[in-house]
Length: 238
View (tube, one colour):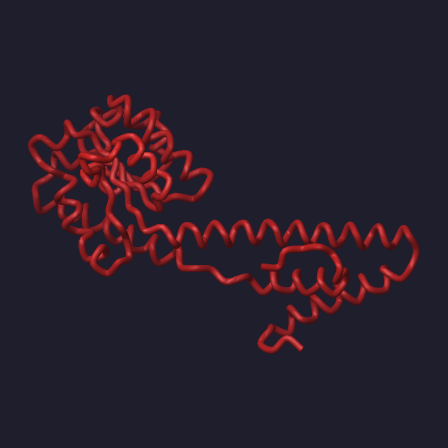
């Protein structure tokens, strides 16, 4: 009947539907019981579909957003150094780099940054005392990115640029790329390249892990069970 489905899934669906069908033709109390079972199955489908939709939306976004303090770029342009290590991923169309230098003079600064924040799949923070000192970064970028990580699963990667008191900050929950005791400002050019390479590998891994997901066999079995038990129930199957 359902070619390619695992036997265990078919057995599970059959048992569910068989029990439901017998109850459906019995007493009013049994009818209420099977309705509750159907509602429970439908709720489980909704949860699974929400997770699948989130995975699809995350996979569709390729933006890698770089958040940094301009004051840290006066002696060494760490952002430019980092981008050199991500260019291969850009050319392979696996990621889309975004920093505030992408904003054109004719575009509204605040609106473009907020648009980029909303689409970011990966956020890279170049952390320093200047980073935490910036009111704009703190109010608009830092807080929004951490919220996106909690609610939508955006990936947070941070690189210590210079020594700072990050221990009590929310970002300390995320593992740094590079040793906070040896920030970029203390490293040689060659040593910084190793940090950037590790960061590029992590971003590549995140991209690969966010491949589009297919409905799980269990979710498919639930769809079959609900349909056969109550075919007239108004459910959006798409």
